[in-house]
Image 1 (cartoon, one colour):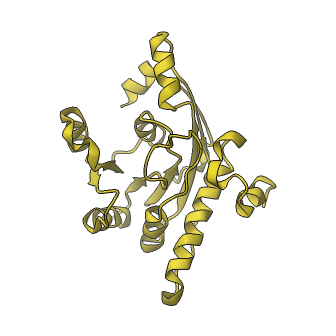
Image 2 (cartoon, rainbow, N blue to C red; image 1 turned 45 degrees about the vertical axis):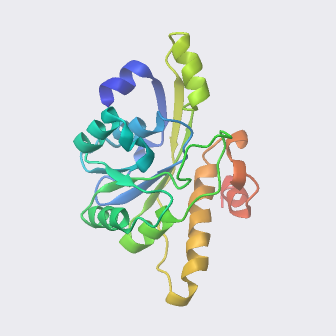
Length: 213
């Protein structure tokens, strides 16, 4: 992965000092294109990364090979995949690092989509910090254009400061998970340029974070 990224992309990373040096945590990037996946292996530089790969890629032999050799996990995005959730939770509690895009799929609008609740659910259950990440330059459309011109895509990664979510009281679970998911996405939005903030561009929490709150 390191060799591929060095050969295929020019990557600028800001905020590496925000990555925790030990213990389990969750990395939550936005998801613009296929090149988002290898980036996590580069700036984390750890061998206990928990990567979840969509079930639709299982038909490709090369992807199956990577999933096996990178100790990644298959996940069904359209059903309650409790097996994958339990495995991710167990690895987190053992000190692993989960990389999960809360949107659940690449954004065809090239801006933030409304997120799904998986990342906030796992963060609360595992009691681990969340590290938001904003990525630009990995849009499939732009990457294809650059490769056709024999140029390396210019990719920018901004890593935010880690934060934690408080425990949930039983009767407040659904509302809390929704609120926590918005909190994660607004942290990501605050790391992105205005045109990439999408669904969360005018969220009060995004505006608060941009103003220094």
